[in-house]
Image 1 (cartoon, rainbow, N blue to C red):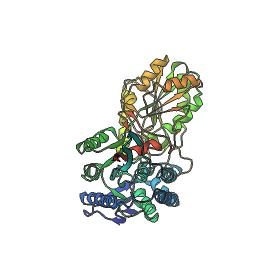
Image 2 (cartoon, one colour):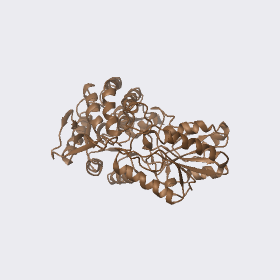
Image 3 (cartoon, rainbow, N blue to C red):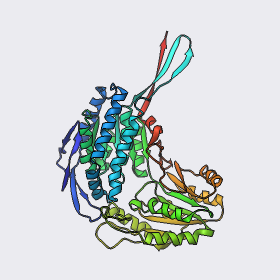
Image 4 (cartoon, helix red, strand yellow):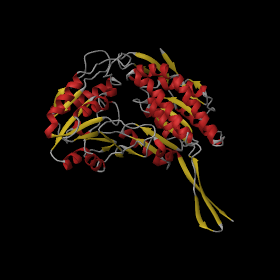
Length: 477
């Protein structure tokens, strides 16, 4: 059984309370490991270590190219532990093994990408008058706190951490209590082997309502990054507002794909396979709704139902598995309740609709037909393998249905008409819009939401702005 500790000031330490968090394998429901549960003492130690590292200016005074070399060393070490770390991540998260291994590679890619920006964080000179030299400096905030979600624990950790590190911040990471093992073991091993100075990156493991709340409320934290639910995100924003510090929040989604009559329906089906049934639908930007023209609805529903019913179900480490388990019994019950409410409201499950009778937390790949825009399953984030199909008669109605939720994280358009595609994209209220596909981005493309899906942006050059503050300097000659 895997046993992990907190990583603070360059050392692995147990919680002073002696408490541990047990971690289950979602494919079996059995305990596979435990992690030392951080208390107030460990939160204070981690923040103090980060603060001391920041005040020592070890990262700030490091030449940009040296910081870049250090980040590339982190990337190299992450790739070395990718296979072993991916196996553990697969077991604790339930996702397919190739995807779990790729998370470590993806994390490395973020460090490589942002290493290239360390010597390009440039200020400006501003003309004032002939007797004044005026310019701006870009400086880190100080201690940056990162609350990491359980669905992509390595990728999402790295996408914010690499950005913060490139900007010169010291960091404290709070892992997700459901998936802390790979981070607490293999990630910390990688940064240690890379020679990261003590205190610059600290990893604590604990419950969100305990360690997470303590961290975001800590007086010495200067910036917060959070990915997760709207409810928790609002609490974190309140904590940030209490101390007037900035926060980056990426929250939930209920993303819709508009399918026009001329669309390639096979592309829609392929997009749905990964977009809503990949990782059992536990993706914030999942393709949760299909808004299809009534003239092609029946044909598309038939294709979607056939695909969903034919997916191979099993643990993530089994070759060829396409539908993996949900993260926990609690999440499984939540998805069950949503499915039940949809059927009670009049939606028809043309595929799936119930939990699978086997060990672990499995739910059938589900396609709901006859969904109305005001139904709960069409409005609220389910975070499971449940696709709602809605119909429309004209373009304006389609756009209205797609935009008519509290969320705005992602959206999609399927059509062979490029003019129709671009016109529709311009009217979609979402942070990213995919055309004739789903999940087309990379580490270089900005990602974030509209409305209740959050604000600020992760990934790409846009993201680094959230980890820098501007200082203006005026020199009287």
